Length: 256
Ligand code: SAH
Image (tube, rainbow, N blue to C red):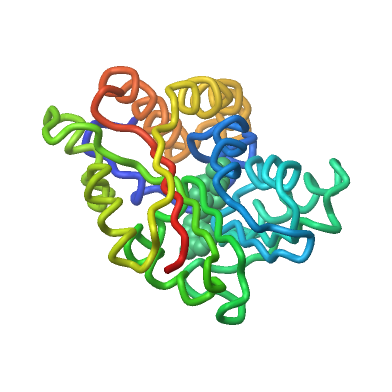
């Protein structure tokens, strides 16, 4: 079973994607916060080109598509997620505006200066916040926007237990430092807001409880699967205990 020193990087990616294919969202967030963030993006039209990087199965992409105009390309490393993404888009009749493709956020298949908006909820950590902002900028048109969520410390100091857990992602930092990184990468930080607790509890952890039962049945006797569920439960417990010290924050920037 998992212990305090286990890092997410020790689990098999196939297993992780299988686990998360059972839930609507693969990271903390909510439809309300996606809509709120979308409210800061202006000048979009039916011709706008938008990319949702690390889109997962597309929970947030569909909400976005229902609230802004334009063509959205969802990109994710895992074919399993992209299959579900495209099926889900079709179910709600968005297949003409929303398309999922398999790819990596560190080798984007877009032309430079062609995107009006780059969206990425709970995923930029895979390439790193600073690197992602720097590398993605060239794909944006002048005045294009980037909107990402990122794990963030709320305080200058925090208890050892939660610091150790986050050692797996050393780029977690405070809001002022993240905003400075965004500015340095060549964006005007136009909005920053903290995701409320229900983005974790109601929209991220609660749906996993049922998914864990299905997953454990599917992988009965599989130690790695049991350990992964143990890790995710541990993450939920740590959040309950230390939510005053960290959370997810939306960072929205306009290309300068
Ligand atoms: N945006 C979704 C998923 C967040 S989970 C949501 O908010 O629910 C992070 C996602 O990043 C996963 O779907 C994972 O498959 C994807 N990912 C990980 N590394 C990636 C990479 N190098 N390129 C593209 N996607 C990646």
